[in-house]
Image (cartoon, rainbow, N blue to C red; front, side):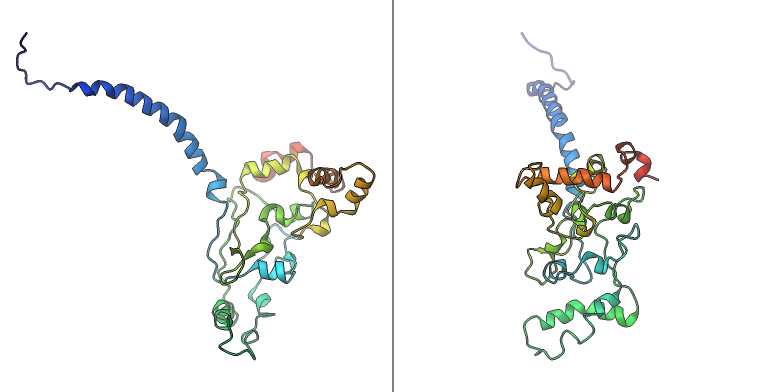
Amino acid sequence: MSYEKTDQFVFPKWVNYLLPLIVVSVLAGATTVPPLVMYGGSAETLNVGYQPDQPVPYSHATHVGKLGMDCKSCHNTVDKASFAAIPPTQMCINCHAPGKDLKGLPTNMPGVHQASLNLRPVWESYFSGESIPWKKVHDLPDYAYFSHDAHVNKGVGCVSCHGRVDKMGGAGTNDAVAGVYQAKNLSMGWCLECHRAPEKHLRPLDQITSMDWSPLHDPRVIAAIEQGEVEEGDKQAAQLWLGTRLKQEYEINNPAYMQSCSTCHR
């Protein structure tokens, strides 16, 4: 049998395999792309670990961890206002006045030159009157209302939201982590987890700024362990036992209010 010549284009035979290949590709994409997009766009991926370069390599590990400074020493409005104040330059100058740190030290002493460079923005701010341009690490969207004093005065510790800042160091130190970074994702779902069951996080008001506090150290929990109400060494059970009582003592609002949209979106 002979075929007549034609000017029409004839697809090669391998084109027949394209249809099943396209179907397989679509099915594979439908099962892999959505999870990848959800993971890539999640707060855990985008926000956790965010660590901007600061104008001054301030080390919380040194000031809080080694020197034992209380959080409220610098952030002195945390229990009085919705915003945790950034300390003014004068706060730094009280300890780091120009020449004070280097006075009497040999100029070839290790770290002296670096200390001078690190503190230069502080001294420049002091002499010029201009604020140090700190970069915000924990930045909630404008449509979300958050009040520090509402949480701090109801038993939520600093470490619950900010992590172990006493272990967050500064550039040029020997600390494992340089600078403050965002330890929690601060997403709406993350906030609601606490709002649904605040007893999992509440602590005594005099332990709000403590970085290493444990419910097992609380006198009431120790007494409960001795009475057999809490199993010895069970930190989670101790937290629930104590948190449930603190929830009543602090008069925490009911779950309906805590999960209401208007509570955080005003």
